[in-house]
Image (cartoon, rainbow, N blue to C red; front, side, top):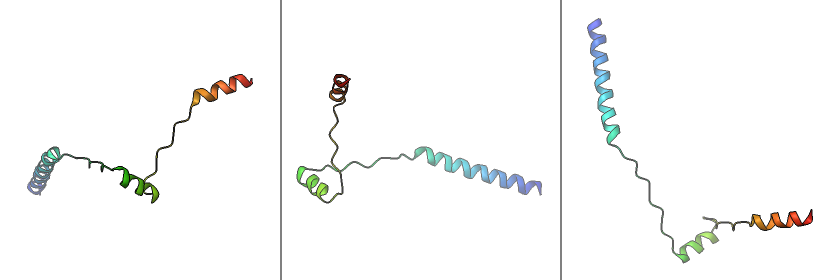
Length: 70
């Protein structure tokens, strides 16, 4: 009985070592973003596939107005 347990434990250790060595060799490569020219970009915006970026708000201008009102 103890020989079977020892054999099973050795097999499990060997399997774990074999899979761990393969895991170190794997590399995750992120996909490249597609390059969009102007025409493709405009057509995708019209179809609502991509959304255009919002324009940044001017915070300084708003703060000055609030100070003048007080």
